[in-house]
Image (tube, rainbow, N blue to C red; front, top):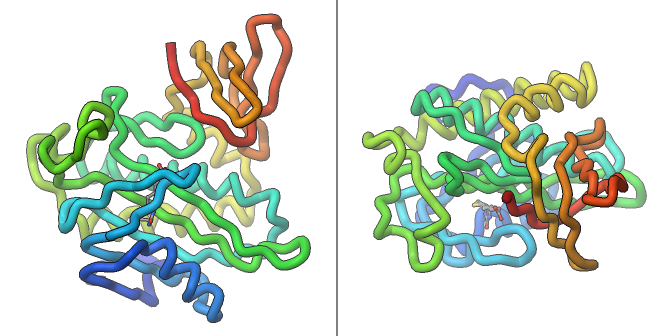
Length: 253
Ligand code: BTN
């Protein structure tokens, strides 16, 4: 990748015209010992996947569809923090590329004017009580026109092109995401999660707002109070009780 400004991330690249899913390929590579920083990237995915087993629509040549292999020496409970580190890196890259500041909706959505422009999927391969690898998938809607999104995604999604009115360089986006990810990953390892949490909160849209959290176990209405030093969402429900939310869908009111 021309113009790469990293030491590790993106130094080994597996690039595809078409693939089932960069995420699946990264899992296969990680399983076979690929080094930290390995990047899988594709023009088109035929089986792009989102969180909670959802389909991720990946129009050919329009977006950034990439997965990174990360091998931190940490216990599996730390994995969710990586979604937040990545969200900060992607938010900064979008800001650099377009001048638009996106908002982060916990845990993994990047929005512009309330519409989704990027999503992050962090998956784990663990052995005993240690992460052996994290597969971090990033999807960014870069140069889509409204018609490039199928119904009903069109109403909920946007692209950098739609918002800015100009095409963006996908190569530059990839380089910038890798640059910021490497930077904040290293800050996280040396200084802990707090500096990341503060940055994340500066982009966060949910904090202080009324939300509905939908989980497998049910729904909770309340106010998002912040995130813990583990990256877990703190929700104060309408009865004043505090909940720690590890995984949910969030809606705003
Ligand atoms: C979400 O918001 O639900 C997460 C979406 C993650 C999509 C990316 S695109 C690159 C990588 N490969 C996949 O199949 N999924 C992730």
